Length: 151
Image 1 (spheres, helix red, strand yellow):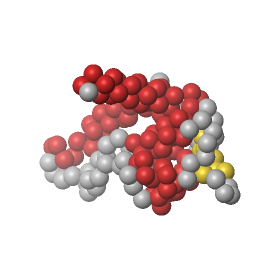
Image 2 (image 1 turned 120 degrees about the vertical axis):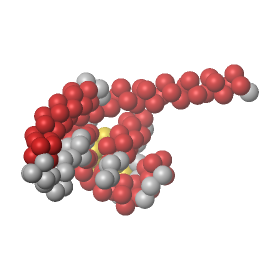
Image 3 (image 1 turned 180 degrees about the horizontal axis):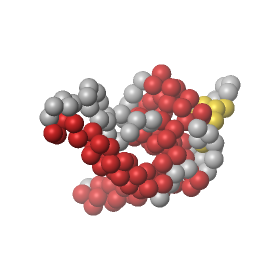
């Protein structure tokens, strides 16, 4: 029972790219910020490029760039680019059909999970990468203010 971190990593990567304002970033630099392996970042960048969210500048000084403005990329776009799984999964094996709960729980859960998935996707569709990046900048300013007040 694993939870994917691809969405969180993808938002991190794209926020980093959006703050660089057109300066291409290498997978090594991005991996340093995410604190992960550059190969994982390259795989993630491929998924994001396939979805039209990033592009690559080749050659010396090359790297990843946003393919379109941050305000035009919803968090749902990012989620769909990197995560094809449903919010929750059902049983891997069919429950016991001789049990009242076992024979009915899958249908009950399908409805509940569908509603939860729709709510999550609606929430992500209402926020952009620019919103998330602005929140990062705001959090950093608050952190700096607290640091100055404490020092």
